[in-house]
Length: 286
Ligand SMILES: [Zn+2]
Image (tube, rainbow, N blue to C red):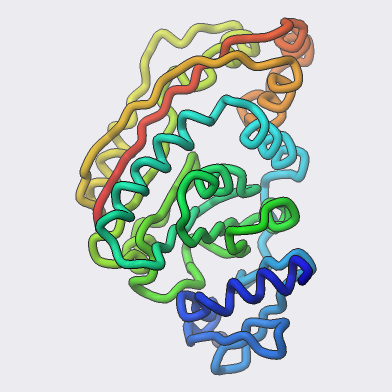
């Protein structure tokens, strides 16, 4: 069975979780090659098994190089490992008291590595969605298990009350849509950076130490407007990156794009560097 056939078989099992982004009607798989709604809007599966469910063409801001760097650093370095463990534990706890199959949407999954890593620890049904076709293409090419969809956060191609958990990692939110697709009591797990996130990178690239500690108060306030806040877990640690890791980190970090090349070289001339990860994990119930 090739990648596309395997993916279509997976979609077949959970096809009732999806809906047409154009007319919002239910969809089914036709001729073993397309998702087709009751009004005949047709979305073909790609060679690697993802499906593009955007209602209009979008030009994505992120480039392929950024996703390649991110895929390498997330899947091959230790940098995000403690994050994946924390998220996996939160999901495992909720899975114990839920009906199966347990469905998890990674909303804004990019090139898919965070979701893949978490699924290596927990057996749930994972769906990765991003507006960037480049990101989803890379995810589908490399990773076998999650279902990969190109889609719009503001118009999720998903039926009401279908998912048990939404992961939203360093990515924008659409709370109205999140509430709509979550089962009653479903979880939203949102990861946001704190002021020390990638501190070393900013210090070298811009030669400044950010004394003012910024807070996520506005984000938390907005979150609690829509969801019952169960917990905020602070996750903070440092880890060493090799030169390759640092190069990938610079490529995947928008704040580095405006830095001077001489500063970037200073950073890369170190043999290895301690990098700080500093997150708030917001956990809310629908
Ligand atoms: Zn339709």
